[in-house]
Length: 466
Image 1: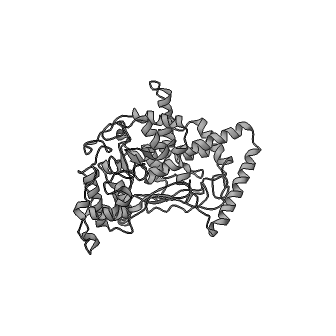
Image 2 (image 1 turned 90 degrees about the horizontal axis):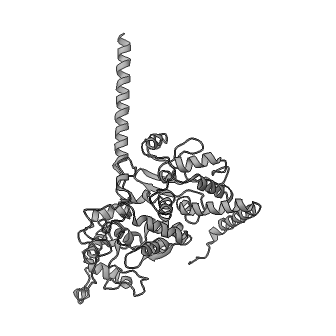
Image 3 (image 1 turned 60 degrees about the vertical axis):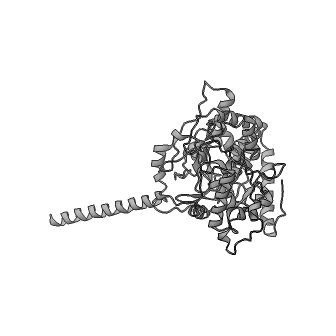
């Protein structure tokens, strides 16, 4: 792990966090052995649930909230879930805590937005919920500061509308083991479906932003990054991966000759999956290998099977770069910005530290958004300090250059049937394509308001005539 020196402006906050942490440790020391064990179990469950990733901001205190989560409807800010009695959940009873986590309803009765994956957490067992409650109330340091409040545009700022959404899409039932499956697979199912909430990202959503159960884990766009198909399908999914390759990927974010994690998946691995026991990772792998396969007509062969070494250097010898950057060819952009790490051939470094572009799933899927996002934003790893695995080139390359480079890479190393447009690069750079749901809802609300006014006008005139 690489640690950077603390900046002067962070010293007071860091000291306060340490003091709060020591206070929490001292408080736990007075608890019984059974209670300490329960808190430890709750910490593991919170880690498996990846709570810290959404409820903490970079450089801030754990679970203090305030992280902005971009959604098609606007930015949703996570809440303070420390045991602070003034700004957190310190006054929550167990019943209120469980209702918030599994039912999406706060102690004050207000509904949470499903950016909080309570539709998955609904499957958490009562026993694990008790441990989770013990951890957040007795194992987490309270932070007495308010998190930024969410302010979505009308009509989505009316949280009561989520009650109707829950009636339609929330299955508030606990996980039930499948008697026909092994204990290992059932353990993997519980971890993946309830705690790790894999379907939240990897399952497509309908027009109302609810998961489409008929296409479970078939892959879904997250606005910018793309969560690929992770079913047992050997072509569209990860059915061709061995159990050990899946475990390696979940533990380190790297599967040799196949993939490396970036974006939201890298965060999930750094904050959560990499901290699970080997037996739990093996259980998740076993569960993934037996999920219902979901095929894709746009995936001609497995995402890790594409690519040939590049031999472009002879084309560039004696050829001057054009004066206008947007006139550069794909190989000229690659040679100028990529070849020093990935090598002119695209095969990366011999030790795999600098990944090969051949047989790389980032270039082999039918959706190339992850390739574009990696070029624009780079790849950062590490929860405490951002360890740069690949630098960002968004500030150096234009939308046109990124599109030209991406298409050159796809033709040589990836799925040649996929094309990246300059418009798509522009959309991804801006945070993704805007959802039509907001405009539709506002349009429908406006029509409803007009109808109400007309009805009121009709009855008022009728009353005057009478």
